[in-house]
Picture 1 (cartoon, rainbow, N blue to C red):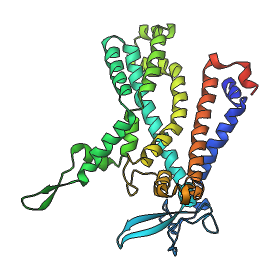
Picture 2 (picture 1 turned 90 degrees about the vertical axis):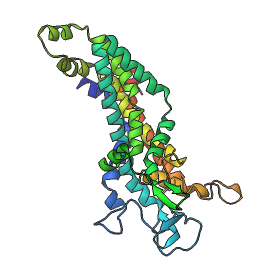
Picture 3 (picture 1 turned 30 degrees about the vertical axis):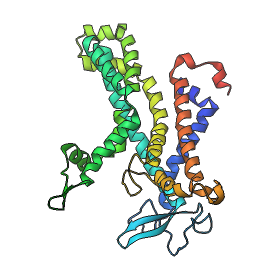
Picture 4 (picture 1 turned 120 degrees about the vertical axis):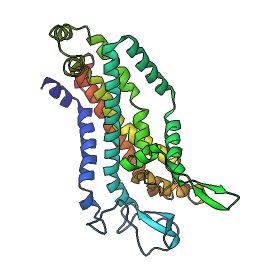
Length: 339
């Protein structure tokens, strides 16, 4: 209760909560804020019909944030379609919340487990696990995303037999069948595999300092099993840094996903791995620089999504800072409560 009072005594924590709760409310109220054309089958995109002009439509009646025009492959061939940016921005909030929370939580669980085991057992197991952690830290995340993208796309590549002039389809590997069969997001999976190391390092250092505590030695004398000692006695007292990092990573994961998608690492616009916010930015990429090099001519193509991304990242980062001030007693100084 005391820590809870300390948390709400900091004004920036209120700002963080308001921003995070706002995004959650928008995600829950999406069917009312942006009603789909077919309520029984809601989609994250809404086509604006009856428009034949090429330039995107500016904000106006029926399209509060304008439209983005893109040549899309349809059953009738390539067709110029206009997408409602407001509709995608509202419904995309659900996707970014789900992606950020699931990715950060999975990375936190994996890293905390590795750090807890290595920190408590020590000896050779600690050395091996920490060297594996260092190896993952040295590998660039963008290279991992690109590698997984290539691995998942090989089933769509066609080898050409020049003798028979017949295309040969490459069979899916076990890894591809597993990922596709479980419905996993390759980008999410990659970010999890290359984001757990910070949690492992934090948890390892914290548990290594607590494993010789008196209450731990008492649990050992009583004959409790190592796993019970780790998860019942040590981990609850060492989890605070991981919780802080988890809150900050929720926004960071979404920003990374959007950045990778925008530069084309995650696939094309038609790829199912592209989230709504990123898809809007990708479709409006050719319109960012308007006529005569004016970057503000089509401002609605990038400004609403960019502001949403900035607010999303700021909200979760401020929440992480607030949790750090609350859970870390060394950070509880009077100057924080006077903000």
